[in-house]
Image (tube, rainbow, N blue to C red; front, side, top):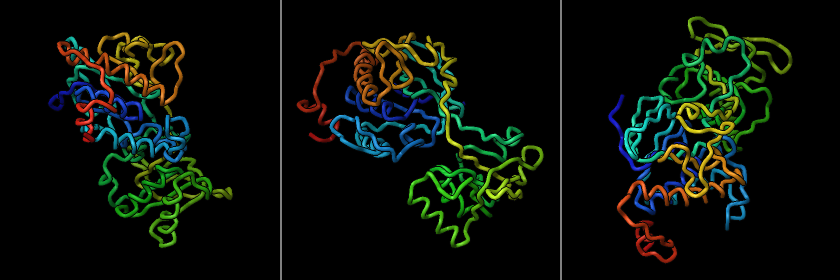
Length: 342
């Protein structure tokens, strides 16, 4: 267990609403750390549909999901948020009024005055492909994410899938792998065109192999895979030798450990006050798709509104003896100095 990291606010979830939380809290001199189970910021926008156009952000007629994330990251630069990616919050324990001890699945510990849950519909969990007996190899030679590339050095890698994750890791792992095979059930890919072009170039150069088909079974022992049984698109069956397999079949949303944090829940979402967006536990807030209240709309712009009101109550907790004077960024020299535009 590591030494506790101390902060004013711990934001759980680094999607658009969590990122905007950094901005609104930062204007009030409240420092933030963020934890996200994904290995990148942006939540669903970055992981599931980075190129999907968004049309309902005020004053921006059209922007890609990844473009919105990039703009939010630029907007919060002045406040220096600290990100802890590839980690999942497991426990939240109240140790003061207000003060919480928060631990992650990687043994990281935070002491934070407030907790803001911005976890979308919950934590992302990889979809397990329907391959008999795959559980015996998970975490040893079958992996749903890459946390350390060096772990795959000189491996015979089989990557299964046709989306951005499959193509991205094909491009990144091929140079360090002993051999890499990409397997997809068809020739068309759902990934960014640039990634497809780069993968095709590697294929033409003989740097990787590509196979069309579906994995029907695995061979190996004691958690170590040695080959995948494949049914080809033409109905033939064959083996692909490998000692590491990375299936990328997308993600599902699960409430996960949130259900064990002692909060009042309503059908896997968290009821909140519409004045402060505080949960049933004082000092713990919920913003974005994870919360519910009368008239709730699951929109990014609604989450931005929730952030603004949440921040006002957060200030009262963090600075109980300090009077909060409402200011506009358009006219406040103080706020403009914080943003570096004065």
